[in-house]
Image 1 (tube, rainbow, N blue to C red):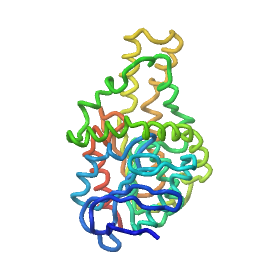
Image 2 (tube, rainbow, N blue to C red):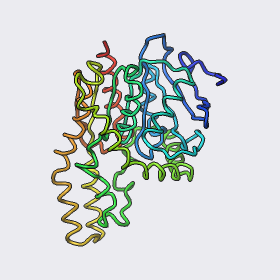
Image 3 (cartoon, rainbow, N blue to C red):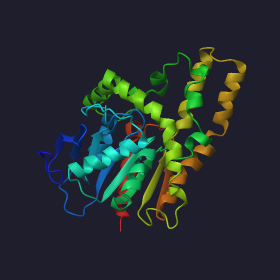
Image 4 (cartoon, rainbow, N blue to C red):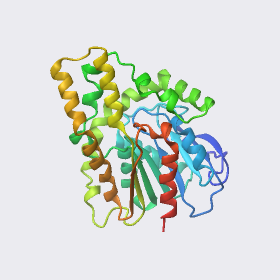
Length: 316
């Protein structure tokens, strides 16, 4: 039995919650919540810390209750014994919410691989999801059509300081304390070890989700519950990395050509892939945020908040 020190509907704060096999850390911000009021649940991307969402949480907490958590092995959560598959992660999130007695309806905000994870959670609790916001999110066909790993692991990028090229240090919208916490957390050995475990599971998650045929369901799995898709500018990120690699003299001619070939069709394919998540509902909104890169939670939190507010306004 979980000893609850926090009333998750009215208090703000954080706590470790026992899900049976280990404990997960969950935090809540925002105004008190009455029965039936929607609340936001944030699902970060591959190898990503919830601390990078500080600006989004801070802004959203002015209008709605926000729940965020550290997945197994991250932050203050315990490490686990099971491989962090998409199915296991969704199962543990389901357990966490039940053990903490956090009730629906939930607006799920998902970034990058969080798009896959959130939809596995949707498969478990489709009736409890009031709406979804996909931020630069993967879907089941992402790696078949636009496998970003081919660029990320290209010899063209050998020795390229990716953080410096992306210039996140100057573009992020976190305050000084939030930025320091984010950097420290993601650089920790604990975080890096868990991220490596997730990378191993990452490619396996796509066919698992595809087998559920969520995008083909009619009527849509969410029916008319709102879905917002926000596309950033990941292609621009890779273009900048490519230029940095060329300046270093990296890659053979064929490797450079292969890299450029992917970039040539990147935006068209990326847009189609991200729009695919709109098929989950008949009530949809799509917009793009130029020059934002992939990590909009850091560089364009206002855009994420705008998407959530649209979902709130369109919940029936």
